[in-house]
Length: 299
Image 1 (cartoon, one colour):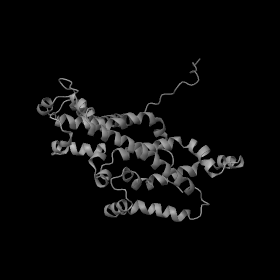
Image 2 (image 1 turned 120 degrees about the vertical axis):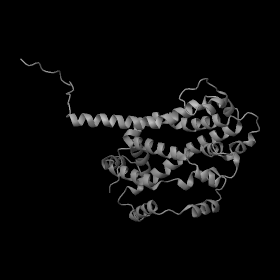
Image 3 (image 1 turned 60 degrees about the horizontal axis):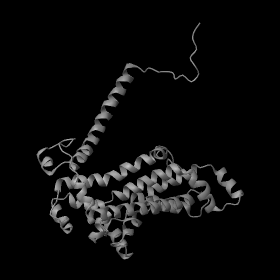
């Protein structure tokens, strides 16, 4: 008499030989790509803890012969470094909130087909995906608005990404209309529906685009380079660029110090510039995995 398998026992499916070979090749190729991606990062981290002489004599290593923390002590004891780090954190935090808020508050009304002028506004949004104003006109607009040497120049010109806007708008259109109608019957106005019904259902996509916007602001190099003239308002990315340039020693002459770990400093600053995003990502990974699969563009 045949023995029945307990309920819920997974059934194993063995593919053909070709399928298994294909899976093995996929693992080899993807593993190789992952290794190529991770090795430079590991080298930078190891270099940030190595001495200047070791960095000069060893072309590549993943583990320093002797751990040295003087480079990080130099960074955190330096006002210029700390100011650039805190400036970048503050601009990223405020900019992410502003950009997400503007994107979602614009996408929600555009998701309503009964909105007067909706088609015209959507066409204008799509138009900006194809045609941009260019570098010089954008700079002139920022200058005439009085935003030069202001942190708002790093936030407002890119406050709404049109591609993100269209995705969020499409996501709002997929939400069940019955929920919104029930909320209106209970006495909610449009703002109440948006804040009490729509936003709580949008946590995955909020997390996704918060991450996108935050990474974009954190890694932005061109905006502070163009609009920020005061060295005291440098962001971390501009400072990284200055420190990794051939004239790095002169770039931080204002630090007024004898000790200058040129090569180790480059590695350490790159680690500090990369680490916050790497630490921030795991907290949003659960929502991010869902958010990248929803809100597909469709009309």
